[in-house]
Image (spheres, rainbow, N blue to C red):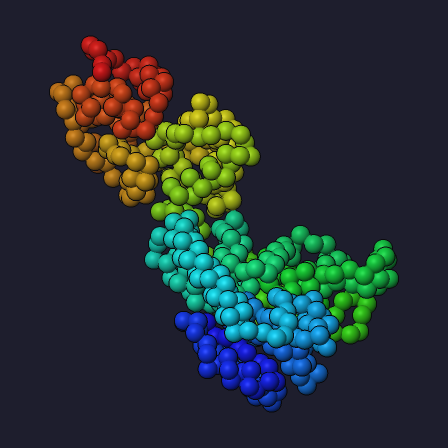
Length: 485
């Protein structure tokens, strides 16, 4: 952790440097104003202790400058009775707090250790989050490449352009970039550019002055100002009008905006992440999107694949959305029938992750006794499963059912026990297509054979309740001989 100490008392600075004992820290000290600016431009700084006289240099606010150049920096102002008002003013501009002189070495070290612990906790949390992200976004070569890039670019201030089909998770990925940046504690403001009426876009984004247009009765702060210090996510950026594109380009060049009706510029520290489901290069050729703006936004380009190309993520996404809907729907799901899980796996999701969430909400509402059945899914999802049936062997766990289903729909020979069961689940010819009912019948017969007719064990292995097994035996006309357990 790099720590800056800027104070005009050279003896104080030298004493601190000589006695400093906090491990894994690097001190950058300064007692001359002329040295400070080159120092903060050259080195990365995580924590700064700055005396009040250093706060204004060349008519520039040092607090704002540090927060822009080193996002996530923690700033503490050193002051005495004569200039404590300057310290209080610095807090309104983003400084953490002030320390009143005389200041001891132990106080500075304790403050540094506290900030160091916070950074370590954040790093540990991000490590755990990265493991969750790998599961939710999909453990495929393409997604691993995207996540690797995300972890590299997140700590920077670079603009990012995310493209992909509607509902594929562009805003989610933008939020990940924000959470892994040094701006994580500052606002993340998301705006759908296509949802704002064209005559209100500029005032919504950049704000407006009282009386600037009909109905403007007060000064209004825009979304850019609301995101100051943090990240502004511009979804469907391709929908912006040419006039608004010019203003966005000006901001990316100078980090300044003007409210509608004002002449003075306002400097803002905002990172821009843009997204679209359109082909911006086609729009440039058609004259609907500025080429210079495209290259400003396209510092880093992340192309998010559709959900149908991320099938390995399905089991974890299904669990996530079931947990998410648990509280809102007031229903706890304890089981997902294999046929339902198979149907969810085979569906192609033209609406991507957003559609998957809606499908599961639909199923949860219709579910009974905490079990999602095939008939609880929307009809188009059920039909897709019926069109693409396959013989499923006895498999442990939902993830294995999904793994089996995403492979080519090749029939398999299913191991069996008794002669009667063997006939029922014999190998399927390569040109034979089973109905979903027959596939389910053979699967249950195979489970009964493997478990020697023990229905309690069958329920456990299939992950279903005894009531569900009893109903399936009756529906599929499977007769059991003798007792069971």
